[in-house]
Length: 459
Image 1 (spheres, rainbow, N blue to C red):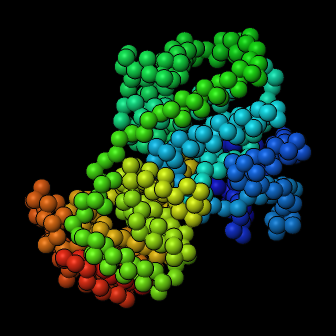
Image 2 (cartoon, helix red, strand yellow):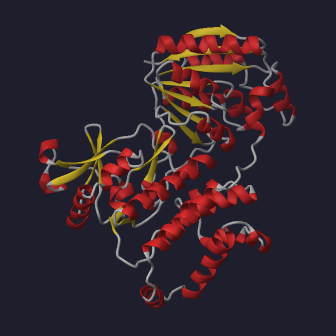
Image 3 (cartoon, rainbow, N blue to C red):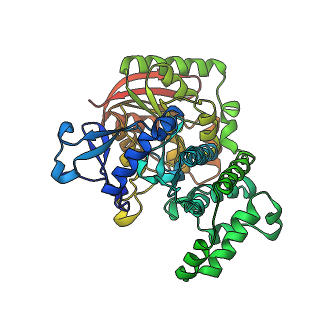
């Protein structure tokens, strides 16, 4: 029995499933005919050559070892990307590049007589730091004179969160999480004052759209009549895409946060940094992981070190500004996947029956984990018991390197000064005992100050 991905149940054009390390999409007769025509027109090859579309091939289900009676005679096959992340786990630059990719795909489609019928952020996945369009069924022939039906969704999924982040310094990720990848126009409009209407993009794309939505709310027949009476030439569509692209390109980056300067304010010197790098490099050489999880990556110093070892890396940090720095410093790297997430409250499963979008911890797996200068933040700032912290770290990967930062460290002293010291388990002896109860300790290496690096292996 084929197990279909619950994320694809809304699409009548086809369902998604995994088989033998690849992704497959079933096709309705209409979707199959549309794909064949688009392929014959050269559209698919152009999108793939531009690096926009994940390579997609039409295959016979029987030849793939699948039942035609269950999944249809023909399927679309794509390679599975190493890490799936969602827009509520992306930094500003990641979201902007995903928006640019969507507009770029639309421009190429329009030139061939096609259009994107929708513009959800879930149509885009990142292969490392490269955004890719993955939903082939979102491409369909354009009806001459029609509006772009995906415009409003593009605003909700991409433009509104970018405007809120850039103009208002608001983190849009909680709104995107709560809205299943979209921010409704009324929600966006509430955050903008009347003066904001003079900022590029706000009047036309937020205020006017909100007014139209209120005018036609609950009057689907009137909307249909209004849309049918408008003949929208292709030149106007190209102009609309161009204006959106110019607007998005011109948005200033949000301000950074305290964590982006962490490497300049850390409590150990260059010698300590070099000693730490050398120890981590030796551990990576011994573990030889294919995939590394760098948790609390900050601006990616050790993620890049792990990449130089040949491993694929998932770099996680709670700071959107830090992840933005990691992303922007590694353009075109298909082996480095940045993710914004707070490990004390990781992204939950959401959507229909809480199965439509998977929880972060269900997607986050590796051969080795790096938890450098992280444990004290989880324990003291996050209030997570030390045993729970080690359950998480040793459960995500069979091997890894964990840094212990003791109470004598200036950073820990500052953290403890801000709150009552109720962290009786926060001792090196307790840490070692808890780690040994969960894995074999393969390395103990002292760093300057009260820091220690521990290697573990639970295989």
